[in-house]
Image 1 (cartoon, one colour):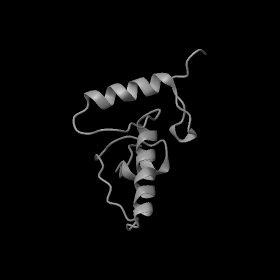
Image 2 (cartoon, rainbow, N blue to C red):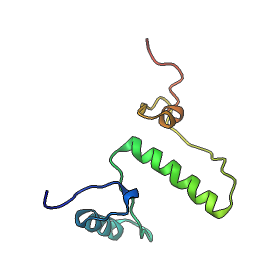
Image 3 (cartoon, rainbow, N blue to C red):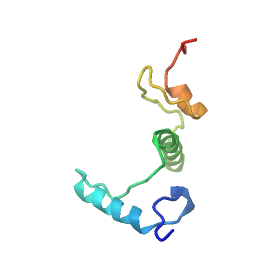
Image 4 (cartoon, rainbow, N blue to C red):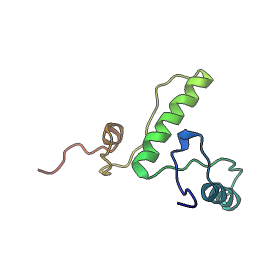
Length: 93
C-alpha cells in the first residue's frame, strides 16, 4: 500500500489523500468550515457525531441531555444507538 486512504480519525494519524480532500471540501463548502472529520460510513457517522457532541458539551459544562432529531422509519440498526434513534417502532415479521 503506497498511500493510506483511510484511518480511524481518533487514531491521531493523518494521511495525504484525506488531508487533500479535507482542504478541497473546506474551499468549496459555504461558510467558514475549517475542520473535516471523516468516518467509514453512515452508522459510524451517527455514532461519532453523538460522541463528539457529548464530549463538547461536557467540556463546556453544559447539561449532557440531548435532543436528537431522526428520520421516522429510517433503517440503520448496526449499533444500539442508531437503532434507538431510527424510530423503527415495529419491524415487519
